[in-house]
Image (tube, rainbow, N blue to C red; front, side, top):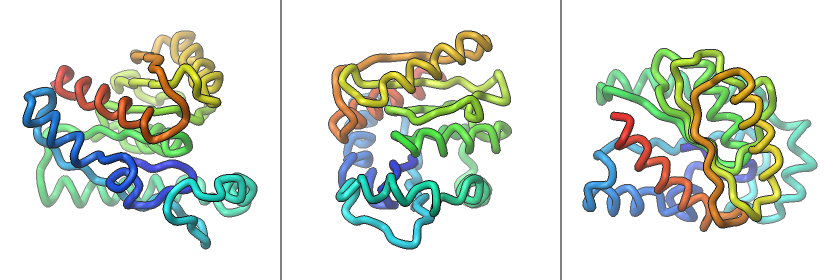
Length: 194
C-alpha cells in the first residue's frame, strides 16, 4: 500500500484505516487474510506530518526532491524480504494519487511477483503503462476528484494498448473517504482473482 505525495508509512493506518478495513472484510468473508505492507515512500528531506497538511508546498518541492525509481528499487528489495519471511503465494500493489504512479512503476519493475495493481485517484503518464500484459490493473477515480481527467486518460491508453484492466468511477473526491472505498473494492477484487 503506497501513500500519496505528502504521506508516510502511517498514512494508510492512521488516515486510511487499512488494517481495520481488511480485518472487517476478512471477518465477513469478503477478502482472504493477507499481509499489508505500508512502507515510507517519501524520499523528501522535509516531510509534512500528518499527511496532506500544506500540500501546495509539497507540490512546489516535488520536481526538485523526488528520486524517481530509487523508491521502486527499495520496494523491490522489500518484496524479496517479505517473500523470504512469509512465502506469500501472490503479491499485489496499490497506491493513491502520486502513490499510484509509484505502484505502477513497482509493477513494471517486478512483474515476476506483482499480479494485481490498484490505482486510486491516480497520477499516471505513458511511462506507467504496463510492460507485462499478464498484470491486471484496477483503476478507481472519484466523480468529483480533481485528478479524474488523468485517470480517464490513462484508462483510454490502456484500452488503446489492449491491456487488461478494470476502470471504476466512485462517488467521491480526492480524500481518504474516497480511498477507503477504493481499498474495499480492491480487496474484493483480490479475493475474486484468487
